Amino acid sequence: MNDQLDSQLSALSALSDGEMTELELRSLLKQLENCSDAERAIQLQKWSRYQLVSEALNDERGGHAAQPNFATAVAEAIVLEPSHVQADADDSTEFDAPGIVASPGGAPLWSRFAVAATVTLAVIVGVQQYQLNGAALGSSTLASDDTSSYVTAPTSEALAVQVNAQPVNANVDLASDGLRAQERLHEYLLEHANHAARQNGQGIVPFARVANFEED
Amino acid sequence: MITFPIICQSRKKISTRVVLVLCACAFMGSFLLAPVLVAAEDPEQWLMDMSDNSAQLNYSGSLVYTQGSRMDTMRIYHGIKEGVQHERLVHMNGQPREFIRRGNSVVYIDGVNGVTSLDGQARRAGAYFSETDFSSSYAARFAALREPYEVSFDGRDRVAGREVALITLMPKDHYRHGFELALDKSTKLLLRSLMMDVNGRVLERFEYTQIDIGNEIADADLAPEVLNKLASKPIGQAQKAPRTQSRQHAGSASWHVGWVPPAFTLSGDARVSGLVSGHDRPLMYSDGLTAFSVFVEDNANLGQHSRRRGATMAHTLVKEDKTGLFSVTVVGEIPLVAAEKIANSVTRAQVK
Image 1 (cartoon, rainbow over the protein chains, first blue to last red):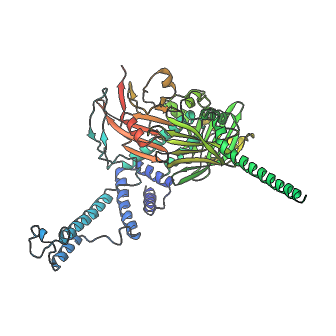
Image 2: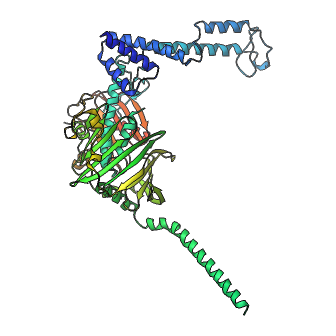
Image 3: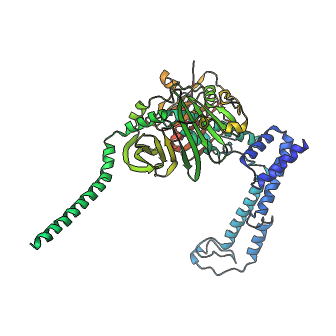
């Protein structure tokens, strides 16, 4: 059991470094599908840490991650900056506070910094949350994680019900759902190629499309 | 007297020049008239000959298949052995994989899934193909191509060192793609095929770089190579690859496709029997040149997504009615707008 766990951890490390072939990835996904929930949780945690290390080594965060008090530091620095003379008298009603003036042609400079700092902080927190949830562990692009999709059945033979397509059990067995979906799509592609080859007089040539579709 | 030789020499020069000019005109005229001469024939007849000859002739060659920035090289072998068509398409790059055909049976072999019998898979899903499907006459379909396409000859070219006639098929609506086909002038075999979208962008190209026509094909060339590497069973004992659970059947429910693009007709047994829906089996349509298939399952396991690789589109939509959720997947060489509209039109019809 420990040997299997170690081999899976090695595979996760290879995945983070982009050194895993598609065959190895599929094998890893199958192993994760068949292991217990506890083992799977351990693997996902390890993978998220590997991802952080990999990104840091590859400088994918543009140098280094921002410090937690980055936004506060920026706001304090802005307050300590000397104010400028207001350029446009028409904007004076919006910017009455002493020391705070509108930069020519728009909102005050401090508000722009505040917006930028807020957005930066939200992105950092969002990325950390995304990674901690263990998303994208080789999951197929076919997995249902699009909460904005709609569901309709608009005919006289069925009720037209519009509901949000919530991803059922989105954080559980996501990899296995993606794998099953990919396998099912493979079956569909083969059946369709079989059909197309019999319908367009080109013989076996439509089968050439099948393998290319899978290799993303 | 002195002028006579001069006149004779002048006449010789003039005659020579006239002959040269006439020859040049004839030479250029042959190029200008060639499309007219070809066009005197019917492009639909060329397409019918293409399908007939592709089933009757022995040929082998190397071809290049491109989709966007991806390019694959393949070898193809086609031979007639004791009246039965044998065909093999093998990929020369990437993962080892190949398709083997014997008559109307096709198997797919690769290193991941092993041997997959497509006929067995199709029959499990409920699809039905007649025994003559691969070699059936396409006369009726090709004769009706002018309904969805503008069909015309478009000059000449050379492919794999052979002269070809170009036939363009421009779609009359935005529910299908256009084609430019290059047919060998001698045998009418398809040597190059371009599939283009509404903007003229090439979605898919397959083109022979070398072809040998008419010579006997060796048995060794028709035998699978990937199979030997897998140490699997002989092709006669192709195993069914149980990669997924069998599809759930919705009892007596059948499915109705409410809309298909113009000129597409249902293929196979369902068309013959007049049914317009299938009991959890794929519904397959073709306009003679383009095909798409509709797969329906009474669950939402596949999620919702659209995925396209080159000319092939796979669009899955989850729908809900009073019975529950079901997913519709449309696979075919059609634009997304067509796939979406088709999937949206699928409904469940309870059979009493």
